[in-house]
Amino acid sequence: MQLIPQDSPFNLENNDAYLAWRETKLSRHPHSLDEILVDIKDPFNISDKETEQLMDCIGRCNMAIYQLPDSVDQTHDKDFLYQLGKQFGLASLDHNLYADEDAISSLRVTPDKGGKGYIPYTNRPIAWHTDGYYNPGDNQVRAMLLHCVVPAENGGENQLLDHEIAYILLRDRDPDFIQALSHPHAMSIPANEQDGKQIRPAVTGPVFSLDKQDNLHMRFTARTRSIEWLDDETVINARNALMEALNSDSPYHLKGKLQHGQGLICNNVLHTRTRFEEDSQRLLYRARYFDRIS
Image 1 (cartoon, one colour):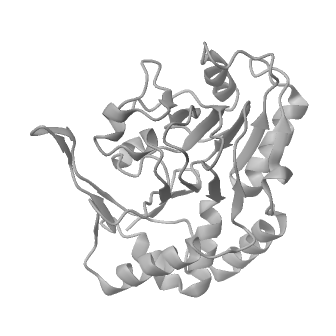
Image 2 (cartoon, helix red, strand yellow; image 1 turned 90 degrees about the vertical axis):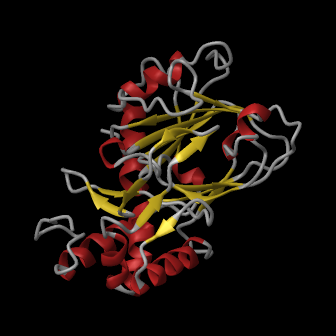
């Protein structure tokens, strides 16, 4: 198991540190996406005030929503997104499968991708997950940008939940659940094979872990196929309790739909997507990073 500093709020033996962190976290957490919406005039040169506002939102709930003006070309060139990310310490892009040559994925209904089981390229709903949960431990997705170019006319809404809130909801119910989901073999994703060839090897790891700076990281998917949970009663009970928390209607669940020019910048928080029309022109850009926002 991972060695956690004694003074960390994530150390299960230090309840005082946890309660102090928990109180601050819950008292500052927003209750709507409007509370974390920040206008950006120029994504190539974000002002100090805009940076301060965005970082304050991210400090409160690990995410922020930004709005770009219509004057920014968002259709023919994705460099604005790359440059925006760089100003928040995001540079190490995850060149994941089916991403564009620039490692930024253009998420639209694409039959030749969706037909192979890649749900983001379909109009189907997507259950609770963090991005890159199938990545190996040394290549975890720490941050993500999700930018809307064309929203779906109907459907395509998101639910967002700060993974630190998920941790709190689970630890408050039973600290043993945190211990169980921190096991290095808690959740396994089988190898991805296509036409007899291995595209990605099997990956096993914890749901909850800490980086070197004591930041909480989470890898999770609510999928029920092509996943294996550790054969342990507490792990299974913890997974079920987590699903109950995710599917609850807590005041910390943020709901909304990105509109044209809006984007989510986050430390890979939990999120969902509802179904939308199959013939929709919906287009979102997604950039995944091995860096954490700084």
